[in-house]
Length: 492
Image 1 (tube, rainbow, N blue to C red):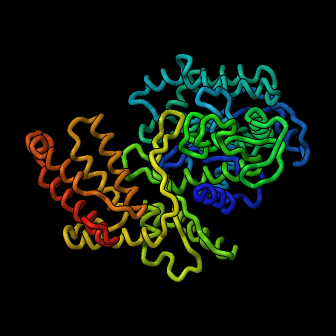
Image 2 (image 1 turned 60 degrees about the horizontal axis):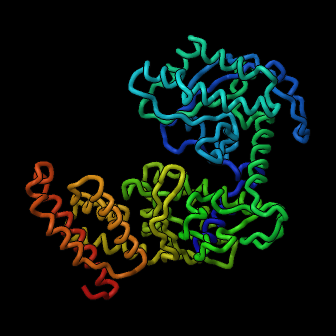
């Protein structure tokens, strides 16, 4: 349960203190250089809607006359503040990949194709075109009475106009950028984002409540398995974590598949906290740079009886996330193994590591290592640093470099791309899992694996040119693992 406790604490510590809706929201893109295509809607009755008080919940449908303008903006141009971004876009992932509606009029789209004509094809033609997806998305606003009847057709007619198509394609042109399509309201020439329009907030809450009621697993209510409070709505953990599903026994489901309650049931308040935690983890605590196609979640947990000290511990992380260190891609592992981190801090820190692989809409768990003390992580860094100083002084001495070195070295042994790459990836995770757990690493099998491949590596036209580098990397890996085993007094 350490992992779940740690996730919940993150949700609490990073929750919004000012807005009730924020913790349900996510940030639609994560990478610098992401762009948005803004579509300005002409709304004839918006001046009347602005007179509504904040407390008034009457839904007055927008009288949309069409599209007035399309332009482009950098997603991170004005602010990187997460709370600000979440409220601005009202974005939340739809409940399924085949869902036509969205929680707000924001659509994530693929990176542009290589030519303008290909992008035109993707925009206009076929059932999976962007125009078709837009039409299905905004149709729900009209069907539920948030847009006046006929609004969707006016918007689609304008977006299909040659001038608007050309303008869209001008904006949608950077093949390296991720893109969003964002609908907003034009107000005196300014673009109002979904979060700045009360009607879109009302739509979001309506869809959220509908989804929670639909996923309610206890029609009579009951007790939340996490907080112990009575609740009329109880939800399963798969609404937060796609790997917490009924067909697996790998995460919180019961060991006995015949049990009726296979997954933790939790209340609406806990759902909000865990939702916020998942968003923050995705944005800050995931490392995808170490092993190809593998996400490594690095979840901190701090132990102290003083809530102020706990807040300070998380504030240190917040400050790091918004510092130059983080924007310059200094990994979280390297931050927590920095000599200046955790110096004379009045708390105990452990970390939970989760190795996951994206498989379409689901996440597959490869392994979970809970309760890794910060002292062990720092010791691993020290062992790698001493090994590098002895054998390869030009190598990076950061701990993240050590883990990357394990994967890269084993990856160089791959001769048959698909099958062997998966084997080496699995072996990498096993090795990293053992050193994080403080277990002995058996190096004999690794050496035998390497020796058996030497003839093929030396005769391979591609591999032969840099075999000496592969050999040096392998020797460094073995020395690191031997030094690790010695430090824990394991026999070699």
